[in-house]
Image (cartoon, rainbow, N blue to C red; front, side, top):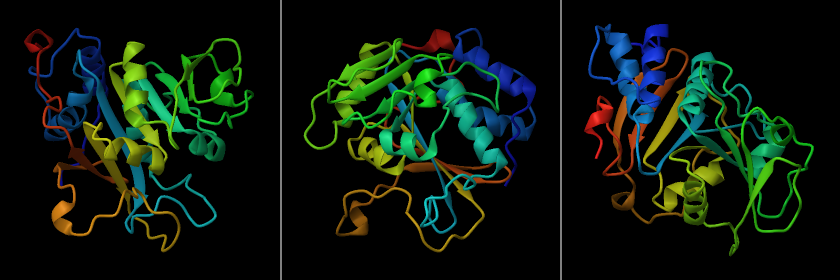
Length: 267
């Protein structure tokens, strides 16, 4: 499997595609560079419709953490760089409150060039403390989606949505679309990703598999049980060699954006 090569020239082209000043149709590229353009091109391409994509890193045996909750080193160095590239291509990145509390993620772009996306935390009961780092760091837009009336620090936007148990994924997607976001990365955790997956809202799902065996601990995606394999999702899937990890790019939407489209060709 040809290793994906995200060279400086490739990444500069992808950022230009995101800004609408370049296309993916032209240029002389190596095979590895073409792999990179195929992987990220559809996510970089301008769109006037809402595009939701998710990323999950897991072990060979489908675990995302140990039984004690240690998940920091699940992805290798190249898997982490991939996640940061996804953040750089997104307008907003979404996590659930459990992930925010347990992992204290910064949700910034540090391992790639690009702007920080808006940070969105789904926190129905207001469990995230106001002194959480991702709320205090004002280097990007900060948004909390909640079903309660807890006040947030100055500069933090609050979206209040009703709920029946969990806040509906479609309501969240609609609210973020109303704010002008078009490319939204659902970063975690597994329950949050599963909610958007089961709601049929994900255009793409990236599953990065690292070469380690954990043996026990929480699994990756856990959705509503199905009685037979005939009912299982079987998305069109493309495989990429990131280096330290192997990535499965799962296309879930029939109208998912395709790479290689000039901005002028958009409807």
